[in-house]
View 1 (tube, rainbow, N blue to C red):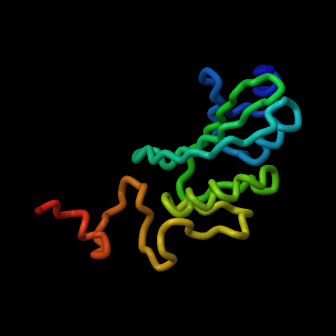
View 2: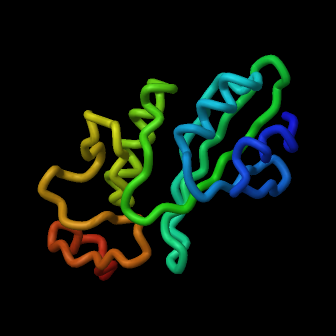
Length: 144
């Protein structure tokens, strides 16, 4: 990847090893990368609650031709751009991140919970989540 060319197009980004840290234009960045470089597989989207900054989304791209990984990172609060029109496989990851972290992906028309019941309140992998659902009380007391 030609970092200088990339930075000329997207000036508000940083490079940290093989991770590009962006502040905006997620959809444009992903489109640019797959259209101009050989990264053609989305391996996964990872979400991390940083507590103080927001939710970091890390997009793990892979190039079959070069056998190289590339990570694109963006910190969001409650919403992010969907990339399901670029990678259909992103639907599952976006749904899982919505279910566990509450991030709404703008453009994903099929956003739904995958693991938690539809009536579940809150998002279990957020650091500010308080588990007060009595359905999970069996796990709180380990007395024999």
